[in-house]
Image (tube, rainbow, N blue to C red; front, top):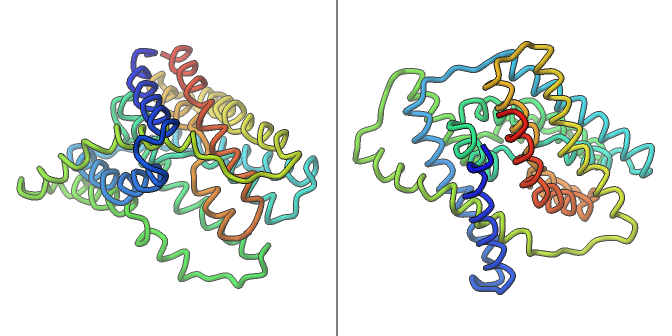
Length: 300
């Protein structure tokens, strides 16, 4: 199982080295990340799902949902009670503690370590259709903005990863396969998703942003919830659900993924603890390479 992480580490290190020596220019992480998010990852998801028979494990997805809700609640309480954050800032803390990077990093890890991204599609749907509307609603209230149902309803249409996943899932559900003139270019584009995402990840680890003094303990505390508490809770909920070993491994690996960049994007959009969110994204992403490998070794 550890061997499955070697390509992940190698490509991430390659991206880090390229970023450290500015081999690809100052905007490389943004440009490559945009390529992955808007083009390569949707194509990869579409190609994989059209060849996959969809089957969701309700107990496993329920265990993931339970671990996410509990972890986010702990993150909210920690932000409010310990670090004296306002409700909107505490909402960002909760999101940073429990919202996993299911796309840019989750898909490469799932394909490389688990062999497929089937369980991850359920995780992605849960986060987009359940967690995201709740977070946006709380942020709107904290920023004194009116609740906008149209914004939530149009979210899937504004997310190319979700569009690619939805199109592939529909093809799989109805047993339809795109013709070669469509499938072959998309498969070729999708093949670039995993290596490009990992190089972009390495590049992002070299980008530094402004932070406030005294935030280090907050970043470390919420990162610990993300990388330690959430996978441990997922493991316990998985045992209660009596999951099979393969399902348990997929559950805990997905729960141990680092904080999604959406946490920083939302924080910046609403002006709520954005430097903390950015620090947690970077810290959890850097340390997740070790925690994911440890989980893979323990549960293999």
